[in-house]
Length: 393
Image (cartoon, rainbow, N blue to C red; front, side, top):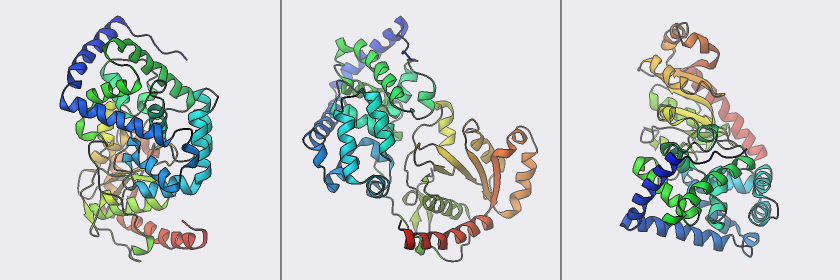
């Protein structure tokens, strides 16, 4: 698949933004962004050089991953490195596959796919960040910034699905490189010499648009993984915070990544942001719907693709219709929806399910009472304690 060519109108708009960007680069914010990017480049080029990548120690690999901007979505980076990278892959494989990804003889799309097939735990943002900063003249960074900035600039150079979902593999990444390369080449006379310069340009536009949303702006406290045995044997759920807490704990045990927007809420003297494994979620749908979807009370996301699998709205006293509408934002995805509420609200749920438009989506929705959720957690606890005892975590 070839990328679309830039139109005259798109080129004009690009140049207008780039001229403002040149002025911004002379300001403290611009100079700080250049310094941050170039220090990032220096670090990865040195740590992942041909001489060093095959000699990475556990501590060095841990440092490399934690230095990635893409790793900032994880509340506890050490937990992620241990349980999602080192344990399933092993250090030897990680060193070998990183070396092949960076310095193999095949084209980048083939190397990208081989790495994804052989190594668990790396998504497009982290993979492209590594490639980008080791070889900024050849490879682009593909993360939330271009996903937001390109549509903002009216640059429809890539398939729409690239902006709604994760890219699928090496072919998709190669298209991203070509599309962003065309933009880079168009702006070369305005100081965009490599893909790092282009990313600084994107960061300028992105940070002006939504500064609070960037995981690089704000660092959250580390996630503390709660041991299963710390839960009481008898579970009682009587409020919104308790339901969210146990949904997050249960999702963690079942192997999902978990997210809640209610980061400051507290249950059992623990903030919910310290129970969830993700502090931010990647854009998985169009910008029109992502704002609403990000407010879903609890989301369980797949380990491999980081896309939502199960979404839960806790409706303690609020209108159930509000929760149904919010969940419906993801009706085009393969997602299961759950309303979690006291048992006496089940009849309200069933009544709404008979109305338009929900009756057409009846198979997508389920109701779970607080007591049913408590029973599910109680049942899961001894199973996972025994599993961990016999098989390990």
